[in-house]
Image (cartoon, rainbow, N blue to C red):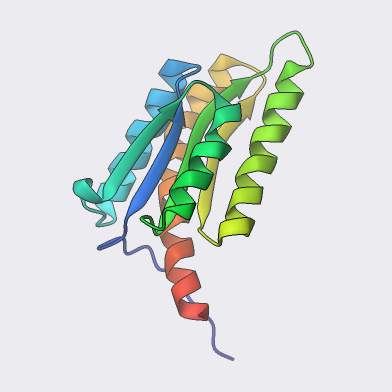
Length: 150
């Protein structure tokens, strides 16, 4: 049996990042960890493009335009949705995740979804570095995996 091993080599890959500006401290932490991991894996700084949007619900639309432009090997969604006192948390969490998944499947471009959905700011802050770096690895791994199965 032939097994395709995870490949985290990012040299030559073009990565697009869409980051929400809502919950700015958390999103800045996600972005910092994500970019640091991309650079550590060999992605050139000039091959990383960042677009920011007001909130998590706007992320899928920009991802769609980036994917359709065929300039990126992979995309990364960064954001934070922290539970409040209303049903709005569920709407934003569910719809942003659905939108990211829809874009990925419609366009065939891998998208690492690091839109955190937490009950508290403290939970999001505790996860931001790990999830930001993880999103970078997922994006790189999926590009390389798709090349291997093509």
